[in-house]
Length: 359
View 1 (tube, one colour):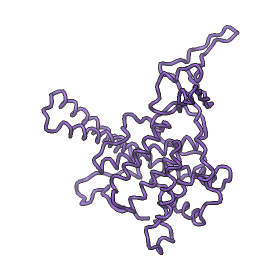
View 2 (cartoon, helix red, strand yellow):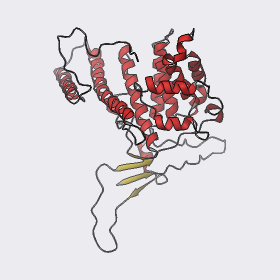
View 3 (cartoon, helix red, strand yellow):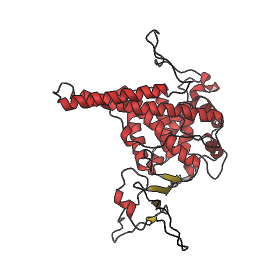
View 4 (cartoon, one colour):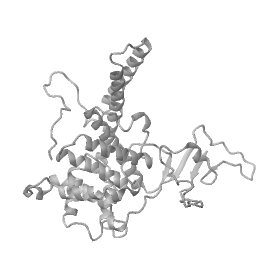
């Protein structure tokens, strides 16, 4: 059975005192009431019927209906918040630096589409995203050596000043920008370093929930680059949130058992180099999902520490440990040849030991 969502915006009804009778929800939001999907005004079912020639047709209805929906377009930004006539002269060079040095570690932007937007006067990129990309890339830019202050601080301040203007509605580009602002604080640390990124990540998780980035809603109909950016942006946010939560000992905003978004894939517009970046990112996603389950079990065990546990709880923990150990072993055996290594106790340095990345 196929379910189609009518993506045409609804009209709000207004009562006598000028208050909206309901709020027009997004079809993809994760906290949407399930019964709203079955309203006759927005959903209809396509059922197979027999032909007039008397020939019988096999039933295509399964226990789990295939949901098909049209990707909802993002709310347009005000003209003052988009690129034409206010792009700085050095922005194109910084964007090139971004894709050379930063993109391979946070591959959430669809490069061919973004470069088209840079050259477009009708569909320019988000200004907060532009400034955030330039702020992070400034560290590797050739002009950064002659600066007295932190590299990219001007772009960071411009992007930060635009946050409130971009909080009128959740957008993928705004999520990407905030993630990059969090990343910028890794190289320019100030007081409140641990709390500020975690607070920003809370904003990211709420916007992801509101536009349904964490869930696989079914078959999506829309531009392939937009669909891919949704997947890539979510998984970058998921990985960043997990690593930050482990470092700070906090509860992650996302839980792996509630995230069933599909893995990213390279589009036809992207070449072999970009495809390799996506494939490497997918390996990291697989490892991060296992890490998320390990961290969840570690937190659960820490809560029970010092308390008398029942035999059932002990057996449950041992069973989960065995399953996680199996997942890690399978992950290791399935690694591509260029990423595989043989664990050994003979080396003095662990292969994944923390070190500064240099390009």
